[in-house]
Image 1 (tube, helix red, strand yellow):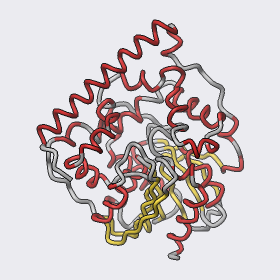
Image 2: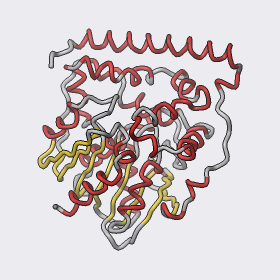
Image 3: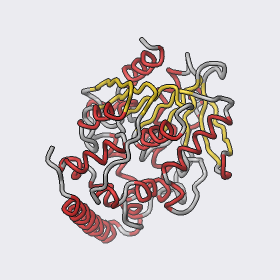
Length: 344
């Protein structure tokens, strides 16, 4: 990889943000003219029945440090080892529906809505979504569940928070499983050297702006979810219309968009492009990275780069899965999780 000089990198990031903001402002204007105000306002939906499917578990709430209320869905025997499942963006607890059903046969599975998502609390201000604060929420959640340690599984943003939790509270994380999420220091390193990843990360630069990203996400009744879940043709059967509708319902609730976007605004802003050295955060517990190789947002380099920051590292590659590996290859992902936890 050829190093991308700091000032040049910052200039390119600013240009990408300006370019995409112009593109989407024009798109919003065209949609407004062609389809009227309804193009910019998602329709309100009743709560989809699949979110209350008892086969997925029981909905519960816990109030953690600072008065933050977290919603989670649990399934399985509470006497068995705890698996804490952390979703990414734009998702919520339901992205783990395959794992809730399959892994609860041998584990106590808890799928959380992280702060700012779904039915959990949504504190105001971008600084409320600093990754250390989110990690501390989850530390206190595990304690409130009566456990001192657990296996943590994180996808996308949930993976980044899982890395932070392992750094801040290493005694809590027995084993760490990451699905299509970069180690934060590896991401900084790749962005310093890879034009490819810079251009893959175009949306992150757009997300630094106020107002506009929220409007783009909900454009044409959240058509982004239709496109996002159908980008891998071989996996479309995993995304039935009722599931896509559940995502539109969840993110279409009042005030549901800005908090998730604030994760990017608070943690992954312009500081990425100053050329500052990464603050290495080692993972001391066993680490498994599961990676869908058709991920369009993340460079394949990131799948194995986490090894540089881990004492005990293994990787499981999925050639036919996209970013949403746990939904597109659930049987293989679940088997990899079971084997890693049991040490086989």
